[in-house]
Amino acid sequence: MEFMAEHQPSKVHQPPEIIVLGPPSVFKLYYKQFSSRFRVLRPWESPLSLPRFLTAEAQNTQAALISDGIRLTSAVLHHLPSLRLVVATSAGINHIDLVECRRRGIAVANAASIFSADVADLAVGLLLDVLRRISAGNRFVKGGLWPMQEAYPLGFKLGGKKVGIVGLGSIGLYVAKRLEAFGCAISYSSRKEKPSVSYAFCPDICKLAANSDILVICCALTEQTHHMISREVLLALGKEGVLVNIARGAVVDEKELVSCLQSEEIGGAGLDVFENEPSVPKELHELNNVVMSPHCAVFTEESMRDLYELMCANLEAFFSNKPLLSLIPEE
Amino acid sequence: MQIKSLWACIFNRHVKQTSDDTSILNRYWKQPRPSEFLSQHAQTIRAVVGNATAGADAKLIDALPKLEIVSSFSVGLDKIDLTKCKEKGIRVTNTPDVLTDDVADLAIGLMLAVLRRICECDKYVRRGEWKFGDFRLTSKFSGKRVGIIGLGRIGLAIAKRAEAFDCPIKVMDALGPSGVLINIGRGPHVDEPELVSALVEGRLGGAGLDVFEKEPEVPEQLFGLENVVLLPHVGSGTVETRKDMADLVIGNLEAHFANKPLLTPVV
Image (cartoon, rainbow over the protein chains, first blue to last red):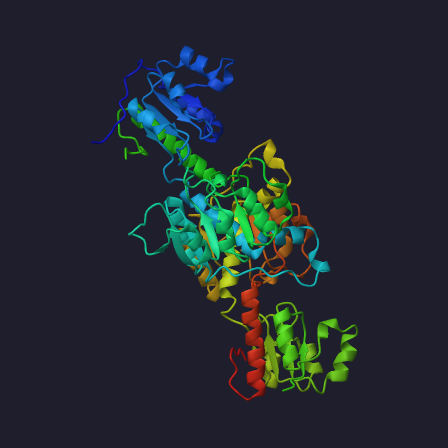
């Protein structure tokens, strides 16, 4: 049976009311536009604690827009008795108590796969940067060093390399499609084998690493994937291997990664995510075979605009009793 | 077999080793007094090995009456006087195909680096600026129109990669203020002073440049621009490809002096 969020009609001639928790970056970027389409409750502007604010202001609020920095627990939900819809601004929803939402009849919508191209593009960009020393070369030329140095160190070819993708969801598939065009051979590891793809399935992460020149982490962070990329996996990847992480910092044992990079047990790394953002291990700053970005894989003008439009479309569908665009189905 | 040849430029270790094996001599770029050196050795030099920055111009060709073959460690031939070589029956070879993938890869790498500000992001993290806030929004690459000037081997390889990012390939017309120029061909293809002022004045959205008019000189006005990524002519600069190129250069020389068909003749 299809689950459809049911909106109870509110007062006439008033824009529908939503509560924003976070606030998420997309809300800050599109503040004016959101505020003109909805009546927005903004707890962060209140001196009251969140529970007190919700009790005072949000007892009739039916829809919430929430950033992935907020843990939507049963304690929070308890203070939102009229809530029927949660709109998450990320693809991942491990910060939301889905079971509790189901129990209360609250529908959850997420960002689906609108970011996938941008995240995959950054994965490829970081990889090319590590292999071909793009950031290092840029520093070299802009530092005025080219006329003084005879030979610049060579990089490494991407074509023909074996790529292991960890997690073949939407992002993993986009990464695979792009790297295939560069002449890479693709294998993957995932919770379940995907019979619809032609790539080689390798359930054992260590074996995948041992058989790959490049490992790209594209999986969700769960209890099972926490520190999945261990010292053992890194050593299997090997001295010329490159790790790219655009998923979540904690999927990789960061201490071991730093140690392997320093002792040259692996060849290089392209990292958009870290265990304790915005802190990044100082040891990485000195390394020319590491390229880092500040967790910004989804932060392009286009993705933020697409996200804004999707969030509004979900909210407006809810308030018109129409089907949501990116409802997370019950499993 | 001893082949007396003139090496116009610097090579990597692999080529040097191979050349030592076959007793190829005369590292021209190391000579403090080049014209003296030339007159001393003019009667014995039968081959010249050049690259993208130093080749065989008319002056050099005239100074070497025994010259039979110019084997270039590059695919570009702009540093070789081809007409003069044809006139004098001098053979010319280059290194096509083996570097196509690397140059195309770098072109895409530069596009991503510029649009997604990857070098700036890396700098942002290294400087500890992330603690004070997120980096600003960048531009999506997937789906953008990619214009390619020159649909030869490299151009086609770039098109193939760009298609995997759902980028439509377009016939080139003028770039506007949000346009990004990538040059992995040759510096002189682009009017460099005009390019520099367009970037400095914000008339062009950005640039990724691997080649320049007078390498290794690079206009310093570009150094401070965060929408510009500069590389020291490394289009084919991978361990794998430079080895393949070196094998072609040596292979061509050996074929010539053994009276066998050249591997990759141009003239």
